[in-house]
Structure formats: C-alpha cells, structure tokens
Image (cartoon, rainbow, N blue to C red; front, top):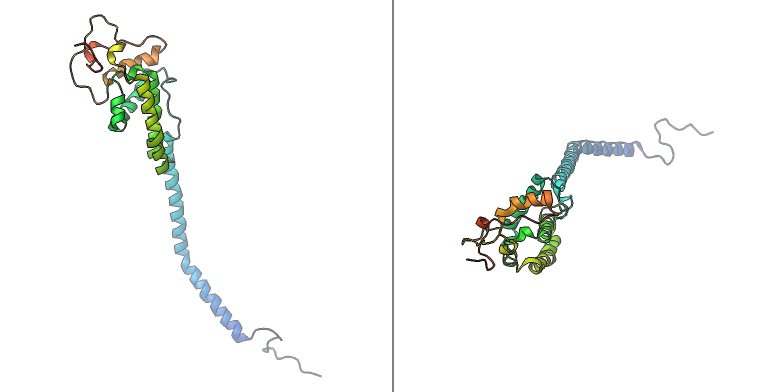
Length: 223
C-alpha cells in the first residue's frame, strides 16, 4: 500500500512553488507598472476631452454664420436696417477682396447698386469666398475653385450685364450734369442708403434717381 502524498509536494503536473512564486512576482511588477500609468492615462483622457470641446467650440463659432445659406438680394427682407446691413457687409468685402483683382475693379460700374442681378451675384460670391477661406469646410481645393471658376464666372456675367452701363443712364432729371471728381474705391457707395431704402420698401417700383451731386463723370457723363 503506497504512502499518501506529502502536503507540500505538488500535484502531478502542477507548477512548483518556485514557479508560482516567480509568476506572482511578475504579476506584482506588472501591477505596479500599470498603477504608475494611471496619472498619464488621466492626462490623456483630459486632453482628449479638451480637444473635443475646443473642436465643438470652433465649429459652433465658425459654423454659426458660415453654415447658413448665402443671403439673397432678390429675396432680401423688407426691413431697411437688414438690407442696409447686407450692403454694408458686401461693400466692405468688395473693397477688401473683389476690387483687388484688376478685372473685378474694371468691370464693376459706378451704377452697380441699380442692378439687382449684379448685387445678387456679388453677395453669393462674397459668401462663397468666406466658405472657401474661413468656413468649417475651408480648404485649398475649395479656394482654388473660387479662383478658377466662381470669381471669373461672376466677373464675366457682371461685364455682360452692366459692364457698359454708367450712372447717367439711370438719371432722368432734365439738365443734369455730373461734377468732376475721382471715383470712390467702391464705386457708387454714396448711393447705398437710398438703394437700401428703395429695395426694402418698394422694390417693385422704379428705383430712386441718383442725386446729381453724388454722381461722377465715369462712363461718358456730361461735363
């Protein structure tokens, strides 16, 4: 009859106490290393949260305006202050961007405010520029499309629609003659308030006549 196994003797096929002790030591070392990573893991999590919040903030700030459709001059509101705001933003952009291009400066007549289709073209072109350079989807390719296709297309249509027009063609007052003087950087800007009032309140009626004192000698005016 065989003797019972010694209590300290390992079961057949089981690891020896020395192996178990080695494994326990390795596990302890690994646990200590993982515990040491906790502060770093926390910092990474906080950075990720900050990045998400910053991205959401930037997107909301930029997209608050740029995600909206381009305003329409042809369907502009009837409140004079709103219409004046559209013209104010547009004229600022014209002076800062559009008129920097020689073909843009040469094609825009002083009477452009009397041409609703021209104002409509310039409004959407301005917002296309904003989307290409400052919007949430701004990119080199979108900016390239603005330069290669959108801006030249608007210039060509403005030239065809009003490129040969002049302020005196909208003037019907007898005896009118235009005073001499250099044109303003944005042509016809002095008429913006009158045009805004007309377009807001009575765009279905004839536009107001340009005041003689505000008109310039551009386009073959009488001297």
